[in-house]
Length: 269
Image (cartoon, rainbow, N blue to C red; front, side):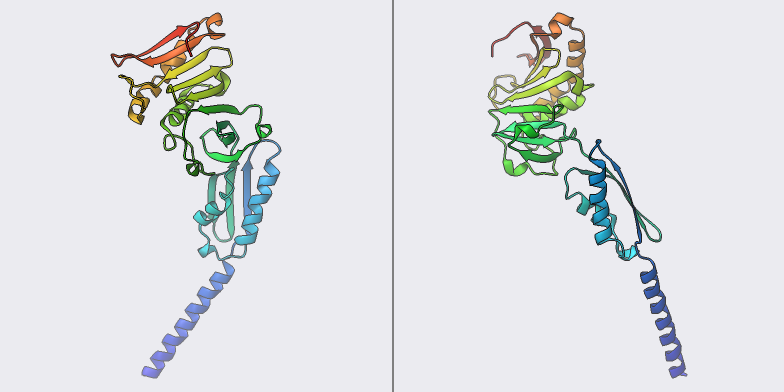
């Protein structure tokens, strides 16, 4: 009786193992679908890059052992790739939707250009100004010390790198139609100034000098000024055409702690 039970159990286990192995063999990735959103001229190259990765490393692999996170990590080795969606479709398909990050800003530091997208995601660095596209906004740093080890492709640039740099990126993000308003930006560390040179001509200058003249700007204090961005833009919109074409919109903190916004035809540098 015991031998009979053993035979039944063994047969069942062999059958179960056979079924599992059959399913593993049958449920393999056979098809990939790739959707790409990119500027004209970049779609095909990015499409082929993603398809090549999927076909090389995932087609033929067991459906059960394919992880979306692995695919994302692999294709995002290219910092220009922004994943919109990755999903497995039972029983044999992978669908990947990506967007190519667009070069939007060039942070000028120590003779190099650190090029980012609109989210300040570092795409690449170059010493060749000729590589910059005409619509890229330059952010030039003066008297600012950055740890270049922190400027890593695939990471964002902001408060973690420097308070004034982080304030600059946040102010720009808060501007409505900032790309149509701002021509270039300067961060002057020695004076704690951020200057937005507008396309109309007037310079919008944010002074981050703390009350009492402290040299160090902390994030909490900087945030009080950054939060004035909408008010500053409303002030700019209220200028007449002559004022918009020259002079300065000055944003500074008074000794009382009040943040004022004013217009001046000229100012001392």
